[in-house]
Image 1 (spheres, rainbow, N blue to C red):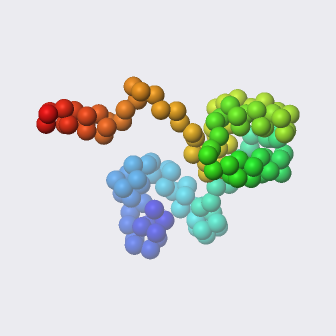
Image 2 (image 1 turned 180 degrees about the vertical axis):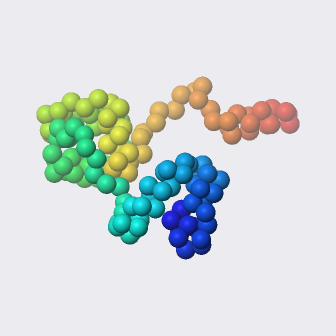
Length: 130
């Protein structure tokens, strides 16, 4: 957005509304941050909030341990590891947030009824040909 407005001379409102489907105020907020701090102004800033219950050093050790296992982990297993190593019991939803933050993909169980649309179409098309 910044490049389109500053380098290409596009109208802020048009870029925000038509290309990004965002408000004009949103666009001006980001332009102001860019104007004040350059590219660093576009990075996420620390936010206020509740401090983490587990120190970052312990979480990074747990993260390393998780990344060493190529087969993956279930959220409940990770919940138990955190509790065992750090003494804190996180809710399963928070464990998923941590996994996402760390760049891990959740291990998803396959349920027979959960066929994707693509697979459903394949099954339908193959039954029509028979």
